[in-house]
Amino acid sequence: MSSAATQPRTRLTIERRLNRNAGWTFTMYLSATLIGLALSALLLWTSGADVAKAFSALLKGAFGSQKAWIGTLSKATPLILTGLATVVAFRAQVWSIGQEGQVYAGAMGAYLGCLVFAGLPVALYLSLIILSGIIGGALLGTIAAVLKDRFDVNEIISTVMMNYLIVFLLSYLIGGGPWTEISSTVVYQQTGPVPDASQLPQLLGSKKLHLGFLFAMASAVVCYVLLEKTPLGYEIRALGYNPVALAYRGTNIGRTIIMVMAISGAIAGLAGVSEIFGTSHRLRSDTLYGLGYTGIIIGMIGGLRPLGTVVAGIIFGGLASGALYMKLLAKVPSALVPAMEGILMLTFLCAGVAAHYRLVRVGDGDV
Image (cartoon, rainbow, N blue to C red; front, side, top):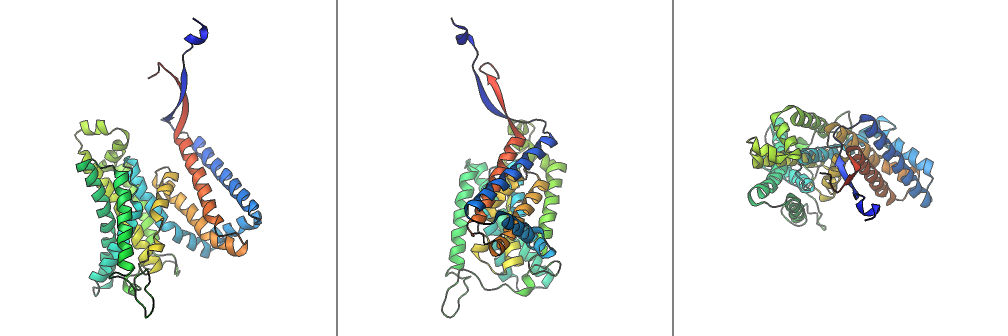
């Protein structure tokens, strides 16, 4: 028998890093930033744009002044909220893709509250509108959790299906249904403007930054305390790492999943409230489109940590806010801006994988 025949075979596999090194994590994300910027620069150069002028315009539009910061934080608000919704669900390894539908459900619930509770004192009126939106998002999340717990329906399938259901429902309501704003000649895909009493208070004298940003910051703090300092947070983390051991401990797994999905849905619903009653001041599907799906990426880029999610949300809020300056000052084609966002998201996600996992070589006999 040849020596080659007795040579044990090995293969590469991926395993989670048990002890993450802060320096390595920083290096990965720094590398992702540089690679993403380099690829974006290449994309700009091939399109004929002035690369230096484009990046200068981006920074100016995102962080170059108080007005720019206000625009960035306004764009970041719903991304932070939907990112935090992702953090809560994914830390439990409940793979909810329903943040998009929950944003819509939150906006619809809040608008329904706006109609039902009209005439109440302003503080109570606004509080009930916000609560209605939170309940709307939580309800959609709870439905998916019950389907998983009682009927073993995969949460990815159920949440994606409910995304479509809730989007089509909104399209009916504002596209010819009872909530549609009707002018003399045109039927718009939107409601009429919401009352002044229902609008979220503005911050710093701006028409863009509103109370929703403070809700996002408060939600980040609450998520951190919930996940790291409470018994429910322990159950959520344990559910993600070892659900069998958690069940042997006597924990009701189904109850924990329902709590996770309800909390996640409530936070995503708050993003819908924030956009409708803080920014657009009318219910329109185009202002909500994509916030939930983008939030999933934001949460993952943030390492499924509240602080990381806030930072990621602000970075990509800055990209969205600075995009207009790139178009106006550097004449960058509008199609390139989402392409640049996609490049940076991809490089950051790769950095997250490299920071949390590693390649190891194992033999056939290794366990």
